[in-house]
Length: 370
Image (tube, rainbow, N blue to C red; front, side, top):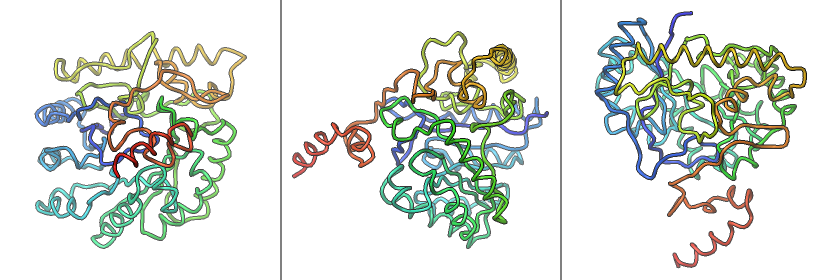
């Protein structure tokens, strides 16, 4: 299969501090260099005839040169989409509209929506973020711009599968995507955990919703699958991911997540120092090694459900990342350097619910504020 797109994780900046965020960021945000992005685009077009680019973060629109990145994409007549939390989207659309080709080359906006209700969504993300994404969707519908919603399913929103599909349909989304939460390495994982059997029941409900609604509904490769040997986009070389440091790595699910004890690195190369061709050669070696390890794993007769029917979760374990197991979570712990000041553990209700001991931190901050 031909390489279909390049994905750029262009920044580690974000206005929100979601409970299921995969990133394990440094105290200072990192932005992918514009010059490097242009170079990778040129190499991607020359080598692979890349025609589409995906942008993610963090929140992509917070990159200091976000609109210059969009211009670099459209100057090469490449289409693009981005994943966004929808914050301050009225300003984003105004800036994008300053150059018509920016929106002409837009394939779709992917808005993160983690609940069918304001209460559920805001508890996972931030207070007020539900209203922001609703406004963003309304603005897109008014301007005739395509958008989809994507939900990261977990124990706290899995009961809203059908309701969120109905909401997406009513708001004019062209698609509804269900993703599956992976562990972050933080104390909040316990509040997100679903047993393997619950994930499989969730897929059944998603499939039934897809049959009931006219809107296109699908779920990601990261979830459970019947076939033990499933080949994802990365293994098929259909997509490649560049992280915010400019490194080509195996998958966006691996980028920025803590790791320890892995036999093999999932970083194929730093594109600041090596060409895309050289990094892709190493990428091929990593994929081949991983596929071989997967086949060897499947020869065992004692595999549990997480290893047999959740290839993405197995891959995270293979590379020493946090991953789900039968009794919860395993793997390294995250060090969230930004969890201080306003974002210190305990500032959200979900933190205290996951760890009641954090209520003392909240009390202390409230008293000092007074």
